[in-house]
Image 1: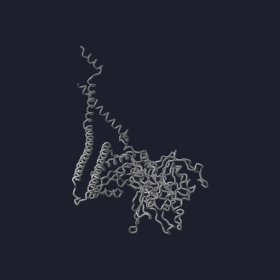
Image 2: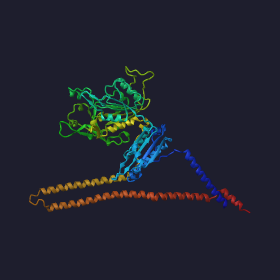
Image 3: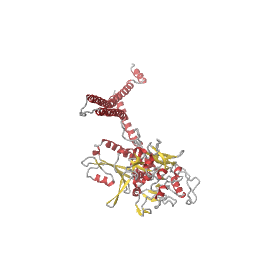
Image 4: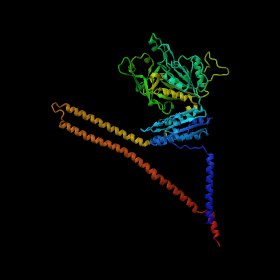
Length: 639
């Protein structure tokens, strides 16, 4: 008995030492190993994220400012904060020690609160007392550079990874990106020969200048500087073969390009004659990208304009006292934006005018991803109908929607071949030792929009002079879309590859489905009640109209009977409405009870049964000695 107890205690001690040893071993050998079992792989970072983190050469400090106590008043925000914190910790774990995370809960009137404001994180009031809620991220690098996410907006939850990694990337590459700007439109400040006065730069051009190092590209130069990170091309027209070839070679080197083309650019002043304004209206104002877009897998028809009755804006004209619908001027909303792309994230409206459409070229190797689309209440109209347009009402004459949605903006990614397969055009001489590329050395990153008018001020911003300063008031998100485009393309290919992720919140889809079904039934009953009310009122009016005596305001027995009948019917339908609503609550409550029964009763019982079976099996194994042991015991019992 003593030997058996000693053996059992020694075995337990050995097992304990073995468990401790394995734990220490696995803690070192498997450090950094993680298994993501979430439905949408929320904690699995994108390959581009991993490559950016591995490429870090200097340390980066992240400061997560989060007011825990004020956030407790908003449960949804507190839940999202857990998601943000866990993702930041995941970033730190994957950075090989290059990223350090500091979690700060700034108290009112504290140094931490001042530090948050200094780094660009802003608090938001959550009550009438002015309590500030901080929920943002700031970062610094070794050269005193700083970047910040002012506030984590739960509506942009699917872009959490992109926003955080963009901040890390900007700190790792503090130099301002160079944006080459090639345009045939008067977007910059300068002298306007038609008005005889100096003109101000377009609002979007000024905003890009504030954020990036903008280098205007001379169309006559026939070259693009090698330090250009993003090439913006607005209304390419009459480009020389040398300039087209330079753009082609830039694209083949893996260039990042934002292009705006248009079948009818309103700001195009080519052919303008102050003595003959009609000549400018009749002139060809379409973009002419040459063979470039086709070589990149994009088809653009400069002779067609997208007319969309579903998104037509109202405009004022001299021919009409009241505003009229203009089928060529469109107000796009969130239903027309592609979800899951950071370029359109958080936008609510984008206005375009006489926009064209884009399609992928059949057989193209590039990936064509729509960004902006029309409604199904749209059709293509010849551009000639818009050149001399005085009355927008005429656009509705003979308008027949095709039921098709037309792409107004798209992202194009992939390897392409040169638009000049025969070699450089005549007159183009390559530098010594340089050969013309025939295909992509790196994948092309292109964002193209079939409209240039969206950049003009009148479609998205009002500029007012207040105390001698120009103040811009935006009424559409055109500028945000352009800045998002340039900002996204200014990053590395790894950063561009990071897209939106699934939401952290998991709705009860079955409950929502039950609610939608019941709401539909409820709405049907409401409509039935409203219709019966209208029918009864019409009957009462008809009965009243047949009275000719002086007591017309007194109800007749027939009217009273009809009114009583309606009141009874109204009570009956209201009772049915309550029954429908009660049925909804009953179904949802029954579902909740089922889930509680499974979680509270079934799961513990199942676990207990499994544990009991395992315990019985182990006891049976211990109680049945091996055959050899039984024989030895029998032999020892003999005299």
